[in-house]
Structures are given as C-alpha cells and as structure tokens.
Amino acid sequence: MDYSKSKLKKILIIEDDVKLLDEIHDLLSSLKKYDIVKTSRGEIGYSQILNFKPNLLILDVMLPEMDGFEICRLIKELPFESRPVIILLTALSSVLNKMESDWLSQTGAQALLTKPLDRNQLLSLIDKFLSPRL
Figure 1 (cartoon, rainbow, N blue to C red):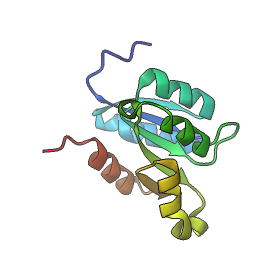
Figure 2: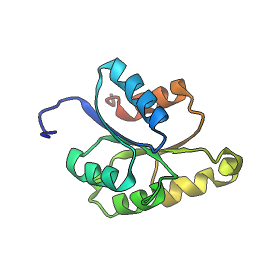
Figure 3: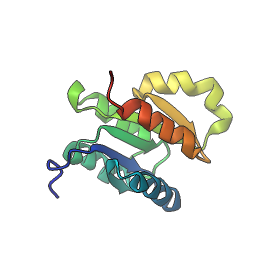
C-alpha cells in the first residue's frame, strides 16, 4: 500500500479488543479528516509505524505478544521526526491515578485514557495534537 499520496493526517490504532478497535476506526472515519490504519496485533502495529508513519498512535497498553510498553520503547529508538504522538489506552483505571505521570514519562506518550473510552475526550485529544498550530 502506498501511504505517501495522502495529505490527511495519519492515525494508527493498535487495540486487541476488536469491537473497540472498530468503534474507534468508525468514529474517526466518519470525520473524513484522517487517513486511518488499524490492527489488533502489536507486532503488526509496530511494522505499520515504520511503514505508514502515523502522526498519531492510539495504543492499547495490554496487548498479547508485544504490549504497548514494548512498542513505546521501540518508538523511543526512532529518530525524533519519525515518532508519532501517542495516546495510550488502558483498562487499568484502578491504578491510573497513582501511575499516570509515571506511565507518560516512561513511555513518551502524550496522553492516557481509560476504558470504557470517552469518545469526546478522545476526539478532543486528537484535535489538540493534530490541529495546526497558529
């Protein structure tokens, strides 16, 4: 697939809950503002980061085989200009309040959202991170 032709901002979604993956994809696709790629597998997602070169990554923390923390570690090794903005997703809301700042600093992510996902909060973050700066 030739990803270089699109002028739209690129978003990659890596989420192993296929229902949530499809919900996020459908929500973002309905806006017709983004070029979106999705996968439910971490290792495929990481190869998509290298090939698709997303501007923003929506990344589940708990994935089978290669989890979100491992993907973040690999992203940190990329040249700065190749690193996407990262929004982490987690179902671990019980530990989130104590760990949010640690997770963000350790992973290099810009935001952390809990499941069940608040669509408006997600859209607000995407708009914040992908809107042109004046």
